[in-house]
Length: 326
Ligand code: ATP
Ligand code: MG
Image (tube, rainbow, N blue to C red; front, top):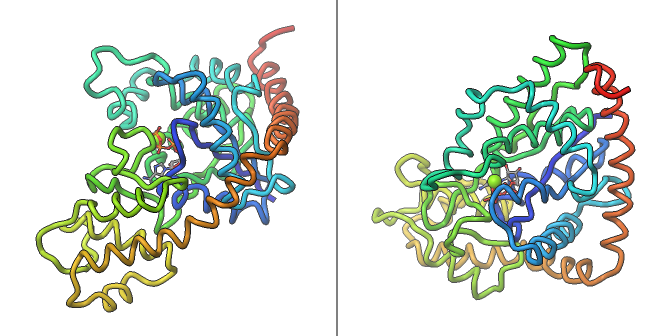
């Protein structure tokens, strides 16, 4: 049995990219592994958050985990800031990583672009993420493609410390799905879909109203060629929509292309609205039920307790190996 860890930031409602890249894996993996799924609220404060909104988003993300099928009787579900080991280990890792390697992270470059001065936390974000993973002796990290570079850095730091001190950490592997690993923004298919992008029509959130889903898909950027075929390089917009259609419907892209031969983008988009709605409606219904029940807080408290018990053991080992404390 392998140990699995992953997290999502409560920076807004989970979108179909998060779902198809990460959450779908959470559900798959919990059948045969020991899974720990976290709502990483300390990551979200690397950019400014409204405190009330942050707490609401944290509970929304937790309820969405459960609504898509994460089962708290099989997996540990908790909020990052409820377990102090994340911040504690993060400092130890900070002292064993280099500004040069952090400067190469593309997420930092993207998120700090246009700012005169970026928060230090945005720069050290990958170290906190490494701490999240290493704290639980994680073997597998199910994430989207955009996190590949951060996983590599986490591995580098773990290997570096294992070589320099006594073997302290399990070196984890990322796990990426073939089809959903990188869902692109609907308004600009050169960028990945993101919770924190300004334009709400760049994404489809799992909790969007049908009218919003329709609007976002109908106005999605395509091209002027007018033929529905997959060509990620020359037709990134329509290729992204084909990919979304394929993962939600379970149909092969080649079969969808055949179905829409000679038909226009309008027809295809209308059907994509239907396919998307069919997939999201049951999730939304389950979300409403879970979000309004008293169970949710209980599940998160119980999860934090279990996570903390594992984290404390790791921190004891780390402190012993580093000669910290008495
Ligand atoms: P933010 O814009 O605030 O960074 P985000 O949409 O990138 O939000 P995260 O909380 O940073 O979401 O990431 C949660 C998980 O979703 C990660 O595993 C990440 O790799 C995955 N993910 C994020 N965006 C996409 C995407 N467009 N396609 C596939 N997976 C994605
Ligand atoms: Mg992100």
